[in-house]
Image (cartoon, rainbow, N blue to C red):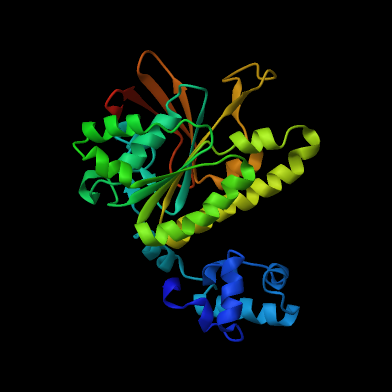
Length: 313
């Protein structure tokens, strides 16, 4: 619905203004409607009153008021799900990794969180009846862990053409947290052109952790992280895309009972994830996933295996 109306259609913009907005990263009406007047003033070098008019017009065109719960239910019918490859893990997640949502897998090294990212980037390409979305994938690699050889293995196990599967995964290596933020903004262009249905970020916090060290840096880090996560959620909603991100854990020596590890990123990351899964290693190829947080699913656990063929029951 939002894509039918272009930025040029807004009153008082004109081609030049539209170009300035796009250069500043305001690609569509939603991004303008959600911006503050101050941001638009800075981006377009226009007056406050004009900026307010532009935002108001974008909001009118987008119908951003209240909707009945029935309308919301109708929109949820558009949601697709990508199979993880394991029935028990799918059941834990309510049928697979959901579009219009952010799913976070956190755990220690070797818990299977990156393997799940690889598996999803292959599975999303399968037809809907086989648990895919007939789509392509964007993979943002922050720890140099992406391995095309592994993708080939997983594709062959699913009976897919490995060459084609590799061509449908668009990989970008993020060198620091600023670069990571820019890559997510750039993702919008590829999503429109290439029918992207999944974004994988492996891992979300690695650069934020190393770029901002020490207590004094915590507030600016969390502000930037917050904007980054909101930008991802906006993309998931606007383009009906699934987002899967991995996250690291830190030791909590103060914990006397239970598991002495916690996800990093604090409350901001915790609240931004629609579905939060804690993954841990068990015997041999076995892994255990625990659903920690979800708006509509019960807490629970699923056991799955990480095999040469990929994620299985």
